[in-house]
Image (cartoon, rainbow, N blue to C red; front, side):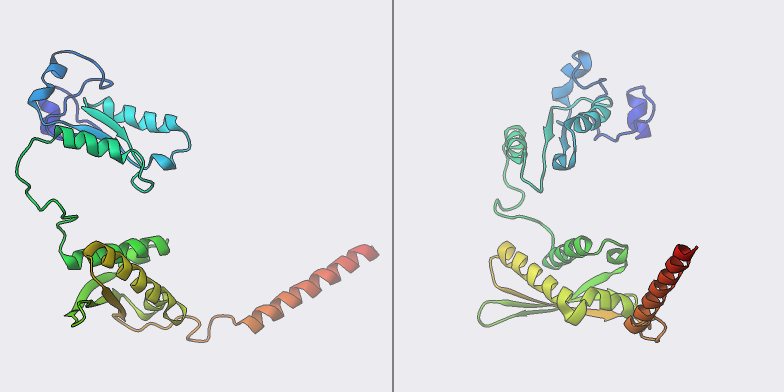
Length: 245
């Protein structure tokens, strides 16, 4: 960033742009620098998650932060989740892409290894279902890969937790969470790979840790009810005393 800023005679930009992006005020000016645009790699600005903006002026404000630092060949507003604006973006990329042989097969969706695809899908659901820092403390590994005679694939995947308390959180009551996770990822892999996939997910804690409930230190339901009833009677007594006065 320092080298790029020095080349154009500016302070270090607050927004990083790829090499060749030229600072041009609001990005709409014309002049010698803009005329030189064809001689550099094309740079476009894609603003994602526009569906989450309460007002479009916030999107324009974010756009101004970037265009104040460089010139862009195109600006696109998209929502990848809701499939908004993607058609225009893809069309622009296809028009600007120079004709050349395919580096990868045209029908290839990702170059990630299969085991990494599983890990990414599992992580996606874990981050959706757990709002705390739990997903950051989990490790994953694929431990089994068995093609079956009927053409389906059996995959055994392991989630490693720091202790048994976190493991039970991931498992859920009667294994409901991990079962749902296996079903969801199996379905996604079937659609992606075009074959039946049976994903088995195991949860392995690195150590045993007793929760307060396990050690009998957590208040049970009967104790909570007794305390609640005692507090209610106390309020009634204080109310009657106040009325007598």
